[in-house]
Length: 422
Image 1: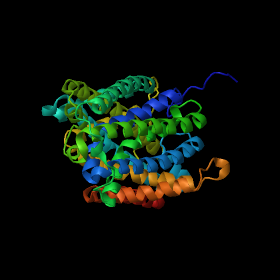
Image 2: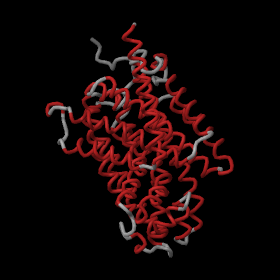
Image 3: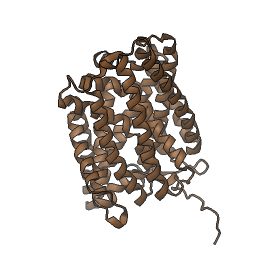
């Protein structure tokens, strides 16, 4: 028997990614989405309770990350919670998780594409968004190694810009740490709603789990990469949120569409504003790159099980990527990016992704100690947190999210009925 690595089959992916690349892909998803898209709506919901909302979102995200890491080590396959739910709870729950992930993260893709357009060319934001989707779909098409390399560059640029913003805000003439007194005027529901919005930003660690078939030694790599990516992101979020609140205060932050740009201007460093705009666009591109990567892998897993058209399960013989799934996801996101509303997309996405992680925590609860089950309090707290945060979101997001999940469940029921009759 040859000792060389096996060649990937027509529906198999190659294992290229180590811990560093997996962490960078997670950072590219989380940092790009949260800092430039979720702070303002979270401040509008919670006021000076923004930091409490951030802490609550981090607790729920930690529980989800721990459950996901244990499950990913047990089931190192593309598809994430779609696979975990199917294996631990039954076919329907896996399908529902996959459906929630695909529709929720498709909305996230549109939101990130629109963020790129809003910062680079506000007058043509939708056109730039569509162009960004097309370009990054092409990058993903030619191989995950190239996507990971580009994400590494993007994360380095974004972290440099965020460091400059924090320095400007905390040392500038407009800084006033008294403006961010925690929780003084925020109701409990507002804090919960802010946590729901900010969870949108933390959810990028799912990209690591959905790349299970492309990670080297997944039983060791994934459990290491997920908490590392989450911990780094939490530190970055907390420092940036403190800095922005110090110069803007919660009310002004809630009413700005470009909070970091507004913050450096208020801090007396307006020359940094163009750099921040470019950094925001680069961050959103990094998030969009990783989002398209993750959604296409879940589509691949669902297509393998024929919950989606089986033709989407094809893997390119040269580039070893699910090329039909990636092209389909890119086309749908491009259409949404041409018509979508940014804040509405964030709320809708959060609802779908919280449903996805609710299934992940329920799945982790069923693990045995021999299978690496986390302490029972972790999946229990994660499940409860996902449900509470989902229904604390604005009612429009809740109603649309529930309707789309119900539509997916109905489609599953129809397919199951037709299969049974056949």
